[in-house]
Structure formats: C-alpha cells, structure tokens
Image 1 (cartoon, chains in turn yellow, green):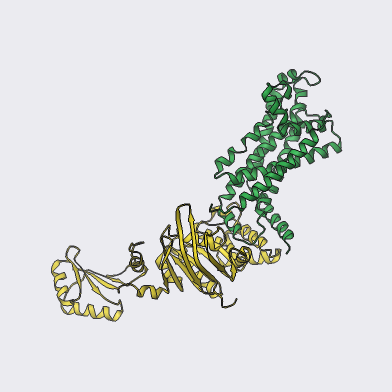
Image 2: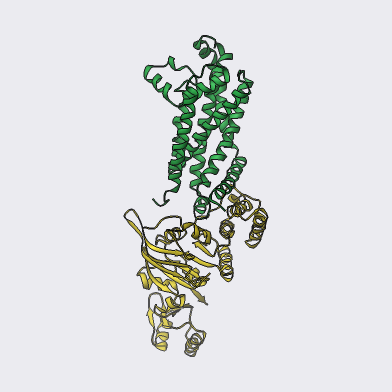
Length: 318
Length: 263
C-alpha cells in the first residue's frame, strides 16, 4: 500500500427521512492503525460503517477507502475490506467450517487453499472443536469470532468492526481485544466502533467521538484525556470528626458532609498518593475508603457533549 | 476472471449453500410434496366419484377423475412451492449474512440465482414425488417419451417463472408473514381455472377469468400431452405466459435486490 490514508472521508452526510444521522463527517484513518469511532447508541456509528463498507449509499460526501472512490468503484473497495457487524453475519444453518468454506469459495481461493485457510482460521480463533457444529449452537463469543474469521478469509487490508464486543462477557471481550491487536500487528487497518470508552482507550491509536451525527472531538486517547480537568482522590471517613480534621490537614479539598467524603485533586501517581497517606497517618486520621479517579474517556465525553454515557470505572483501594 | 465466469462460479457457490439448507431442513421439500399429495387423495377418494360423474362423457367415476385432476394437482404443487420460496427468501434477507454478501466483491445476482436454482431443485423433487403418488392411485397417462419430455420441459419452465416471481415477492415483503401471504393467490389459480372442473361449467364472469388466466392454458397443455386431449394454441399461450412471467419477475427481483437497503 502507498502512504495514502486507508480511509479518507470528507463531508459525509446521511439522513433517513427527516432524521439526520450523519451531519457532515470528516475522517482520516492512517494505514496500519486502529481508528475508533466512539459514541453512545444512536450516535450514527453503525450507519457510518454501513456506508464505508458499501452496504448503503451516502447522501453527500467524498469517501475513499483503500485508495478507491466508494461511489465509483464499490467492488474495488469491497475487495479490500472485511466487515464484522454488530449483528453477526453468519449463516446460522451452516456449520462454522461450512461458513468459512463458503467465504473461501466466494473469494475464489480454490478448493485446497480454501480448506487450508479455513483450517487455519478455525485454529486461530479457537473454533476447531466446534467446526462441525451448526452456528446456531455457538455462544455469543464464538459467533463473534466466527463472524470476524469470515471477514478475514479474503485477507482484507481494512477490517471494519462494528461494536465487536457488545454483549460479550469480560473474558470473551479480552479475547476479542487480543485478536484485534494481533490483526494490527499483521499490518491490517482497523476501523472500530464502540460505545465502551475503555475499549477505545485500550485499543485505538486515534479516537473520534461521535455524538448525534457530529464529530465532537478527535485525537489520540492521551490528547482527549488532556482536554478534561485532572483526576482526584476520594476519601471516605467513618465520622464527621475524621472528615473535619482531614479537611484541615489537606487544605485544597472539597468535602461532602453528608457522604463523609473528601475530594482531593491529584495526578493519581503512587508518589503523591503515598505523600498524602503519610500526612494523614502523621495526624492519626483513619480513612475508611480511598478511591483513585484518573480522568478517563467518560470525563472526556461528559466534557465534550455535556451529557454522560456509562458508569465510571473506579479503582478502589481499601 | 470475466464477469460471466464470476457470475457462474458465485451462483454455483450460492446454489450449494441453498441446497445444503434444503437438505439440512427438509421440511420445506416435504411440504412441497405433501400438500399436493393430500389434495390429490382428497380429490380422488373423497370428491372423485361425484366430480367424475358430474364431468360425464368419457371421464366418469374416481378412476377417471384422477386423470382429469392430475395436471391441476401438479400446478397446485408448483404454486405451493412458490410460497415456500418466498418465505425462505424473506427469511434469508433478514439474516446478517446477506449484508455480508453485499459488502463482498461477488457477483451481485448470485445470491438470487442461488435461491432460484435451489428452489427449482426442491420443487422438481417434490413434483416428481407427486407424480409418483398419482401413478400409484390410478393416474394412467398415455404420453410417450416425447410427450413426457415436453411435460418435463413445460413444468420446468413454469417452475422457473414462478420461482423468480416468488423470489421477487420474498424480496418485496418486509417480513416473513407477508412473504407467506403474497403468493397465496397462486394457490387458488388451479381452482379458478380448468384444474378441477372444466371452465365451461363455471358462472359467466368466473369462466371468462378462468379461460384467460395463465394456469388454464398450462393445465390444458399438460393434459393434452399426458392424456392426448386436444391442445390447440394452448401450448403457445402456455409457453408465452411462462416466459413473460419469468422475464418480468427476474427484472423486478433484480431491481428489488439492488435497491439501497437503507431506503
């Protein structure tokens, strides 16, 4: 591939009747990276993937995928991509193996190469034991893996993953993350949509935040995190006396008398944490609970859109 | 790979997929054969004596009525199979795998061609079973090898036409329920034609419809080929109807499949 962007989008618009789903989106995805489109349900993520993967047409905008114009050369785009949808696109009446061979046949790999590729993917995605079972009997995680494996039969340069871990249990989720990392290590470009902020943070090289059809921010996870106020520690005390003496000792802190908690600005580093605990220790102040809150993408989302998304993730030290 | 080779290869792949579905879930094939067989037995053993006597002339009693009714039963089978095709197409279109096919660099028509060919195989197997049962219950065609060949040819052409029609109906239906209802009128056509009683015994308005609807010339042609009754220009009209239905349905189905799924 040349140095040209894997995906280049300018002014992408799409509406369903009166409902504007994508309102002039610009995207630039560098070859060989993971790009994450992040947003809550209904933000327009799936529509964006459907357009970029040639499934549906756009109302306006200029889109190039793998160096080909989407509107004029859809088949050239199709030959370069693999798609894994939010709702798994497997043939339920066929077995896992038959699904993969179907894909191999449609990529015209030839019988021997098709079988080799199928066996390799079944092995790689830990589906070899279930290869001869119908896809209907698969668990959620297995279906996602089969779905993704089917998208990889043609060795695509760009892989679209539309909410690949929605509805998966934590273990299946981590397996999927590792698969994604391995793919990128092999030179594939990943376009990932997710509503999970930690997923984008974990995987993506760049993140674009989509809210109600508009991009509200774009950058590396670090850049986005830098755009929000710093983190803090939250201390909870057994009684009002503890809270009061801690407030006096620590200074720059905001207390909550009802919850018996104290919010102390902090960068979350171990050194500052230790210093703080030492000072409390010197005054013999008992702390019931300590919570470290580093700025995560939840904060970013809240800061950018003015409304929250999911629950905050916390690290609790007792 | 040229466009034609691509289309053929991909269609063959899709046909394998559809046949595998049919083999793994044989219920549709059983319904294709089962319903006309039930109607055949009903019309031979329950209504046969009365209807046969009513027809008068050379056909009298249930022994001869089976000869009269067999072509109508075959068309009933073909029409019933069309319903099965529409349902399976509508079900398939709701599956994510179709969205995947649309994002792959494959021959676009192959998904539909696979359905058409797969359903045709299914219907032909079902109809062969119906013919077998008809022969068992006393159907005695006088056709020679050439006539049999013509019967097979005309039935295949009809199945081809109605399968494309039912694929289009399966595509136009937004859900499985309406896909099952849309081909219903086809099942009535053998009754509202010369399938079970001659058209000249019907009320005037109905008779006019019965004589000009597509199934009547097809059934008259089959009857002529199988039993040696006169065909006249029914043969040409029958083939004309089949070709016309096939062409219009093919274009319609193609247009429906190629429409943007977001519209």
